[in-house]
Amino acid sequence: MSDLSAEEVAIARQFDLTQKVIPFFDRHLLYPILESLRDVYDDRAITKLTYDLFKDTNMTGFLKEQWKLLEGNENYSKEILDKDTQIEKTLAQLSQEAQKTLDVLNKQEVQEDLKQDKLLNQEYLAKNHNITEEDIDKLYEFGQFQYNRGDYVMASDLLANFRALSTSNEKVLNATWGKFACEILRTEWDAALKELAKLREIVDSRSFGEPLTQLHSRTWVIHWSLFPFFNIENGLESLVDLYFSSSYLSTIQAACPWILRYLVAAVVASESSTKNNLSNPAFQKRLKELIGVVGQEQYEYNDPLTSFYQGIVH
Image (cartoon, rainbow, N blue to C red; front, top):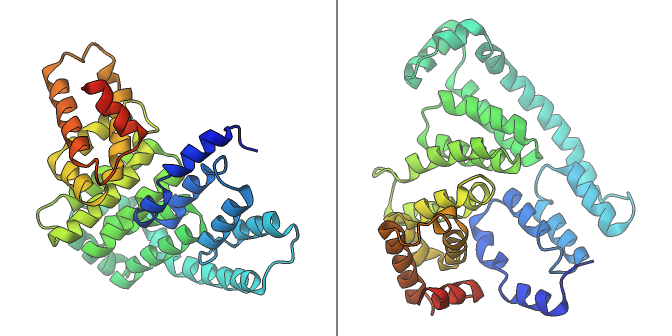
């Protein structure tokens, strides 16, 4: 049962951003968001949403748990039972296909011989250990499968090994997104920050792609980065630094103005605002810039926090 009053629940529902942020998250990352809503919405409704969200994944054990919560029995649907059987077969097959490459990569002499140049590494592995590009791609496929199965530790390792060897820019980018998600879901925040840095290096490069594609990718970076930034020491300062950078601030204004809620919260709550920095010219400049952005976007987005910020700054 929620500890919130009826009035507090009504306000929380009125300003709930879930519908807005759903398009910018992987379904696995939506799970902690849904869990946080149990004090705001009907508990059974959240469980049903969770079940529907994951029914197309390989997480049959998790689906069985949700089924028992919803139905109160273990008479699982035929769909779950059939999928359970198929997943075990696929797991065994992919594990066998990837094992040869993993065994080679685990050899000390191989680790010592691998260089920074991926093409040279592929040539070395093909010549000395009969590891082909197809074998390397099996690590990617297996990593995706394990992620979809909810084994984020194994998925992280597989995607890291794949990324170290692959020359496919598209798959390396996807693997980096996947590894970032794995570290978030494992609450390994330092590792998540490293993946965030790798993602930004790719997404922010001039050669990344069309401007619209880059804008879309930056919106995902902005949303996903909320997880580590709100869970690490000095994370709010890092959030402010990123979101105030010109390319990301313009992305927020163009594609996701609701992120201003989190930027305002970070500015107000960050140590920069409490350590005698209120008179600092650089900090004052940011305050003025933020109030300008909040004012510009008030017709597109406003909530009690952004309104409060406008009130205390003016």
